[in-house]
Image 1 (cartoon, rainbow, N blue to C red):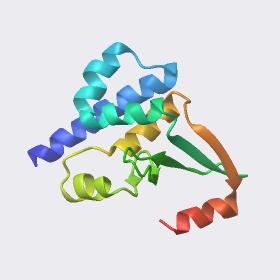
Image 2: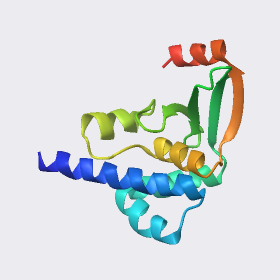
Image 3: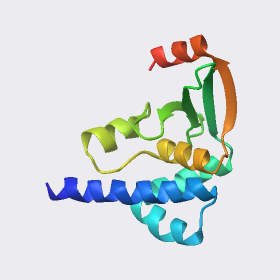
Image 4: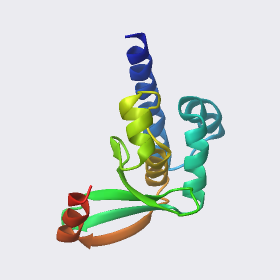
Length: 139
């Protein structure tokens, strides 16, 4: 129970920080050093590397505007993972660390997607709604 309360408080703090970043489209040193690094640890460092390397695509369906992120992994294989920043990633870490063990709020791919979206640093890819539906059906 105590772990659940801690996770809920962490989620609320994280959401407040994300809203602040989204409103200013920038990240302050204070947000980096205290809030985000404290909440997400090594995953945040990895996510910033992914964003810096332009590894986040936002794939948007037209005309609906629905979207999903495609985020490059850090391995030599440069695998790409589909994710919804707030609630899902197709990577192994998401299922192991977040779903099964409840040890993290999110994986580095979700963090990278959220950070890139907040800073408007995504590579924008437009596809038809049919193509987006096909991508989503393979998840």
